[in-house]
View 1 (tube, rainbow, N blue to C red):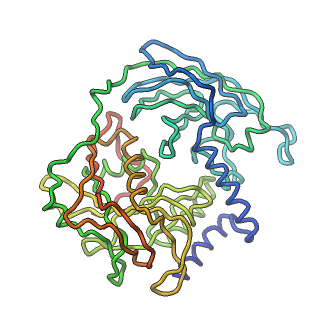
View 2 (cartoon, one colour):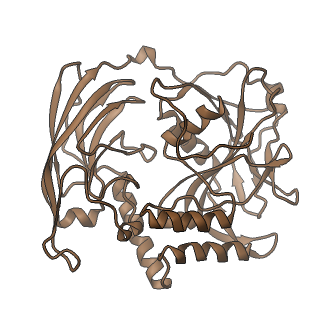
View 3 (cartoon, rainbow, N blue to C red):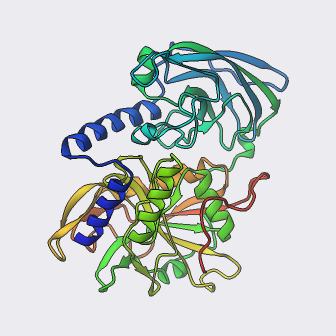
Length: 413
């Protein structure tokens, strides 16, 4: 365990992200402020919502000093719009840029200094125009730039914003003029499936799935708190669309990936997680939904195992154990250091529910309670957790535009 964290330190050293305890603390605080600002649209004056109609167009001003602006448009599932933007924004002069920096809706090219900031869209230009549906923490921002045709995967209020930190906005000037055109109507409320029972996930099926995963020595650990039903491609694409990334399986992969992504000037989100076991083998996939810079300490993460082929005839079932890392604690197995999880694991289960459902690729969802529900226990490292014992069930479907998953490597299974 100690050697693992030593290698993790090496990862960040190679990225140029560690230069002493004072730096780490200060940058982590700045990163947290950036993320909080990026996730929560600023309060806007009270507005009456509008349901857009095909052929309508709307104009919204995106001021440089704002983080998010409410467009006042409530999109429906499958509503198709076109967003175009013009104008310019200027960041003031500094030591590296004595004349300041002026840019359009595409934003500024990302540089090495941007690695320590937590912009809402990690691979988008600095200051670029971005959007999101909804204002909750699970809403996934997307890049708009100068122009984008966008089909809403879920229903929700449309916000536009800038891929910048609060500090950037304090001294910025200028604005983007944003035009939103409605191209195709969305679905009505009656067309959208609500939560319902999944009839083929029976008690006999649940009885064949272990309640908990195990570590290498057989110590029981995290609970299995979600089932995903769908093909491998559907499962990977849904996680990708929801902003989750596949986690490196080894420290060696982590070091290589960190160096490569640092050279490519992208955020490093794929810190490795330990191997846990279900059905007698380690996880097929590890997924994380994390904050850059703080990723080593705090992240939403989960492990995924494909269930035996005959669990539900004709269906591919993925078993998920999801927890939320919130810091570090003593590993009671070996007195080393390990991640501390949020004891309320149901919150992470519902975070998975929200982020995946918001992609529009969940055709049916529900919760089931096994006959032997797990309500309280300890992880393999000794940390306590509690639950209402329910298991989330998500049945996946394809979106019309879904293709081969990109950015998440294939499993051997």
